[in-house]
Image (cartoon, rainbow, N blue to C red; front, side, top):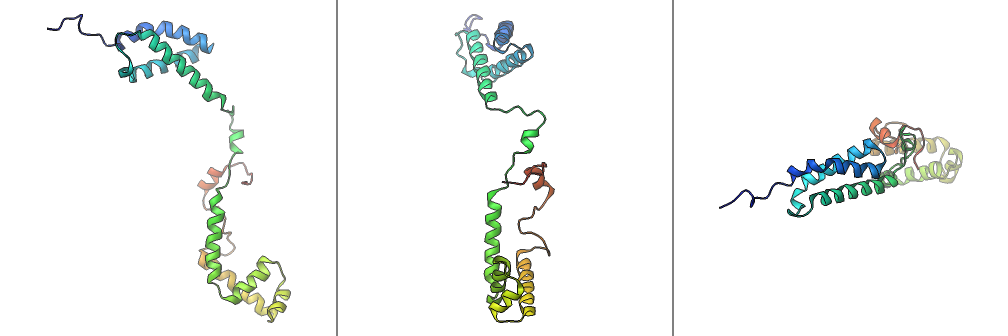
Length: 191
């Protein structure tokens, strides 16, 4: 036989009775009525969703106050690490180009460069990497200036073809507006 006194009441039925005292405690902590109301609401929500952790027969009010207090101080610790930036000015300047883009591009370039003929690699190293003029490169290679220019042009075209680049396109050029949006609209250069 089960009597009405033997059946324990659901603690959720009692929560509403504690809201005024929770609100007063929250106001004393936050010193702001609006923040206090939010804190009480969050406390009730946490208590409701974790009611199975409450031990029936113990002090519900003390349990609710503990949840409220812990929620308040957790929030304070979190906001202490935040920077006030309501207009987004600070956030707009904080971006960094992914480090892997350069390494991936260099790896692709190295593979393509290794597939060039020795003559094409030679002229690109002399003219492109070392900055010699076509005349100087031609003299070092023992060929006519026109031959050096032609080899350099064909080597660049072949590299672009192997890398899938359009003429004049930079290997590290941004690919889409979405990438630019992620990098920031500020116009600052990535680090």
